[in-house]
Image (cartoon, rainbow, N blue to C red; front, side):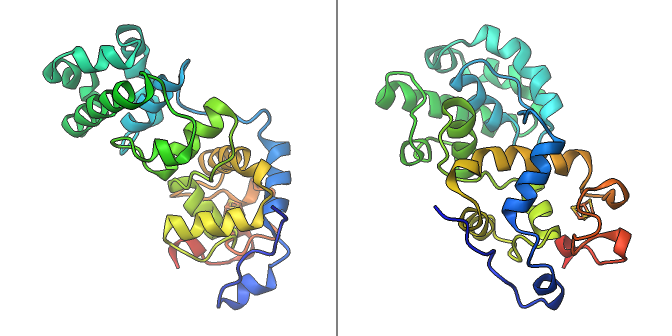
Length: 234
Ligand code: SF4
């Protein structure tokens, strides 16, 4: 897919900054966060699928603590299905909303056994059919485990940074993903996600954006350095 201009918004300031494209952001972040890294620990696609389900409304640090023992105990989809729900709930309790998450894990693993011989499928269409797996999780699995660029995982960091940089004026993750996919060559989608998440964690944080030390400080339409309002709060 060719890089096309980012969808423009009815926002004068963002129009003035149309040169800050998703491709330019990608290139700048690639220099700053190299090599790109994922924040959830995993060894197998099933591990990462489990970790992403556990990470809903939970910190990655907490998930990594829980999965350290969980991965040793549950090595296959069968292991998650055959354990009692109560025991699984206890094992993931500290990740929060543990009843729903335990149910999702067991139902998802039952689907893997029934439809995919216990393996994690490698297409977006199949992944989003799994219990507890949405497009965001599927995009993460496809890129991280299989190197496939099937979408951009729009999490809270990607939403915030994309809005602040003027890469999308939308609030709906699907529309933000569409704007970003239209602006970036497909081969960059997965890496872009990881880089933006890194920036959202390290510099362009939710509560205290650090524009003074940000490489986009002079061009970003939300730069506090330039006295601009935060477009993520617009
Ligand atoms: S200049 Fe500030 S608001 Fe813009 S990307 Fe950098 S940290 Fe975020």
